[in-house]
Image 1 (cartoon, rainbow, N blue to C red):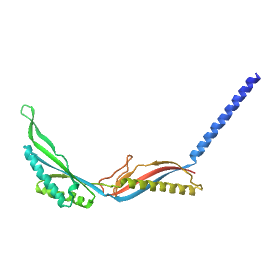
Image 2 (cartoon, rainbow, N blue to C red):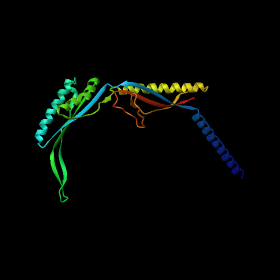
Image 3 (cartoon, one colour):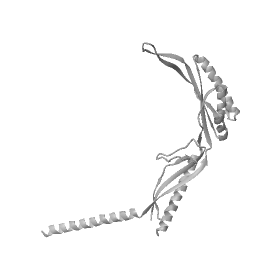
Image 4 (cartoon, helix red, strand yellow):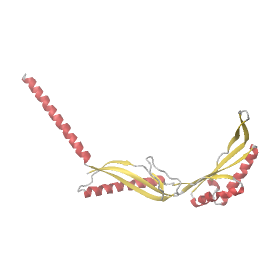
Length: 243
């Protein structure tokens, strides 16, 4: 009986010690977790694109495929000469393959039967210009309508603007946002009568590029503006510091 009582007492003592350790560690973890500061750093920079891409398409239609092809070839030379005369380099001009489709009109006879009538061949070709001479391409995109007055059926798109050193810009903004997060955390800790400890965690936010002076909303998946020549890059870094 005595040995049984001793064993029960030992087991009870071990249980009490184990419970004390668990509670102690839980308190220690809770204290440690609450003894942190969470801060989001931000950095942004205005910049100008250094690469532009512009495209347009022109077309011809004829009942005779060969005639339509010959006319489209003449139009292509007309477009090319126009671009070169505006200062665009020949190496910057790219013509796509010609797209050919057969067109039909859909009709119904007096008995309600449907039938198709061949109306001709439609040939479409596009041209694109990629250049670092933004002003020249901008002028071309505005003046391309001159070709329409010469009988060319042409549709022009708006230029798209890009930045060739985007990765360098992103890395610089990450460093700046990280410094901004630490500065904010240090200020909060100082005003609270504490001192900032080591960095515990850092998460990179979404990289956003918007047009300058545009009311573009940031999105969860990120914004990448290509329609504005002048842009603003923005990035955030979420950090946790010990105190």
